[in-house]
Length: 474
Length: 104
Image 1 (cartoon, rainbow over the protein chains, first blue to last red):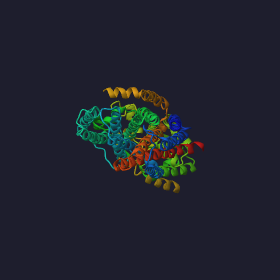
Image 2: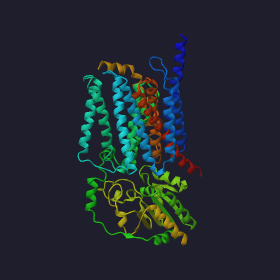
Image 3: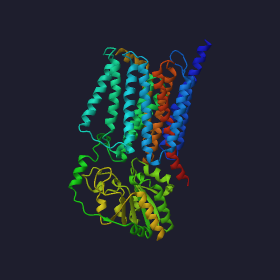
């Protein structure tokens, strides 16, 4: 009797630890959505997670009241994962953050997939609810894993955008096949000899589906996709919660699943895109091609480095509008250098930050913060637009779509309706780009052909450094 | 189908938790400024690393001579831990930069 009471006591402690975990996740997410408390929220959730993990290792008992064993293996895995995870997360460049998040997300998906595989291997006889949970967890985990790896590859340029003809139909067929196979496995409609093959076919199909699902989506939309895959993994984790009757896995997983979905929608809204468009990947597709072809383009004028330097040195106020070009060129530090030189010459320098400049919302804020640019120099879009008319030089660094006037004037444009930074209101506009190629949305930018605009071609970092050199000599 | 019905009855509480958590998740982050989208995504990413608990259970319940289960379970623990630890550290690094700037 005492022994049973002992087990119950331990179980109650375990459940209490799980409760702490669930609560910290909720508070953590809540705090993460406010700038002032965000960091605390993250640490809070991490602490709750640690408690839940440790409690599981030492207090968990299965249905037969047996404790876990293989402690060495478990601890070994935890230690290896922690060391590798910390090192990669510390080492990664700020510009490579989105792909890092994607990769970690994929790991979570793979983890859910492996759990399902082992549980299936541990002999489950259909038809049971347990099998349902195992199969669903595996499908979603695998899609998330495969998709995240592709997203990671795309963001760091290893995998190019590819549209497969008829991709939509192929995807649909694969998806239908997954569902049919899953029903057959879960319902136990097939011979015991055939079912395992079906099960592993589902695994393979889910992997293919994950790959094909992300493959045609353009690089600009990747953050949205990562966010979506993130909520997928959350669901996969929640299925794990069902499998083990584990409340903390359930709440953690579902919270991420629903919060991730909302976040995905919010991200789409910030970019003025619908989720459906993102998923079909029509951005920069046929529609954009048509509007480009129909437009008669004028000629653009180039400006030399020394002319730019002179213009900036005698300006009252310079507004820098950073975009993805700045991020890929790793030019944030060079940009801060230039800002300091200009300030020494008595020029006011501010930054106009479009909410979706770069490849993810907030990308520019993070990058410039890394280069020690003062927080109050970063203007949000509304403020930036207000100050634009008092600006002598608006310098666009590797941004394109976020300053495209077509978003305001041209109802046929695919980005029509997206709020933009109205750089034309400034006295001079200097645009730094590597070439005349259109930006990620794949549409021409009329701004480049306006009389006010001068083009300064070259890699953002190199141009900024040379510009700083020129300015020092003035 | 009976067993699925039984499964539902047995897990009724879990289902309730799921539904409530869905609403909670939506409610909790519905007014997040766009600057924080990326860190929030990253933080949420770390939280679903809670799946590692499942991996620990799988690993800890595997028979000692079942090398397939041990191997896959071990891999699952490593990957799950990567998700948790990497996720929280990356998020912290991002947020550190916001905070540093704010204080000055």
